[in-house]
Image (cartoon, rainbow, N blue to C red):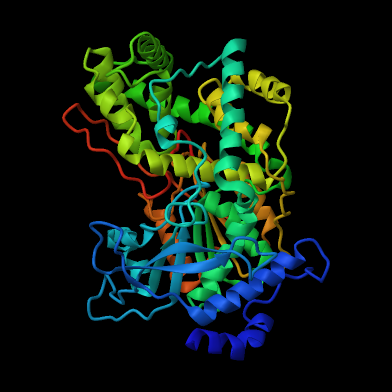
Length: 545
């Protein structure tokens, strides 16, 4: 009853001030109904708040992490219609200064984080406050994670039986035959039909614009007048949409590893650019392995390393390792090395061991994990739905075939795998949107921070330059000659210094700034097989960014 009374008494004031519609959303304008619906949903959420309590369905969680839910409309044009619940997590600000135990750090509000995807789950993010590099931020902010719509516990999407999704072993031809292409076209068509069958008419509402609107409802539910947000990879895209739709609602915003937001790039051309960039990153990895030939014995040049990789792939095509690791599983495992150089020593060691007759490390690292099948299928379903809904895609396979056949001549490592992942969008049954033109003028948006690594393959560096041009007052900080995907809070202390200065003090460089690259990983022997655990999203087969 109290929430209803608060909403009745304060609703009109909240609508007018705290959740004002974006400029240009006059009655009858495109998106006007959704704008009004967002304001109504945000007012309702502010009144209700979030009832945080024990994380009952999450095992082995530290006692400081709390969980709750926030309701958002499935369709913002009809905010009083069907609601879905988003799972939210929180660790309260510790107020503990890691450099001075006697100093109590004042709370600055909530820091909301998204790890990317689409399909990435940020529910566990608040635990990052336990890591030394995040303790200063954890002292000043309530760390807030959440599962975006469709992900995990938030009205989860599914497009096929998870057991089918993780079937292995599989092929991964760099130059597929016509018969193989026909097989994959049929699979893509079936997958698109499965998404529609399992989700029905609700499928169209899983998109980036609604993710941005959900973020504003979450802000209101946290009772924050303005949002402090950090998005990595895909999180930068709907973060940029948020900044365009709700510029006056932004307090501080960090874009880490940036998706190119230009409307013409969403999403078909971004995928082409990504495939090209992964070829360069694959070369970086092979050159590193060659420099450590004394450890791995895979060749003293990148060309010889690639020869050994292709030899292993051919062997796996003839006889899958452990009956479950074929060429596709090998490619997926080594694609992770394109995202995070933390994986370089492990992948090199596994390849080396296989060449020398020991398949166990490769099976451990590349074999499908049946226990995570449902989570992986859900993540892929959300990825597909969001990207297919967000923008027009070529509907004639001849366009895909032409563009990617050309690209594969110079970038064979990832090109066709990327095609098969996205091809359901050619046959998508739901209506497509026209991407929003991300842009803010002088004085519309508080200064924001953009972080990017020059050789990032998942979100090529041109995306950071494009966002920097489009968001007036933004500042770009670059990690030179490095390619790890998602750099905030990582091993580069220079990058972390800019991040902390901005989020804790609001300080930014006057112009662009740059940091030297973080140190390359050290090679590891067969005795050290521990898996790295990057904070950011894991490639899902491949992650968007």
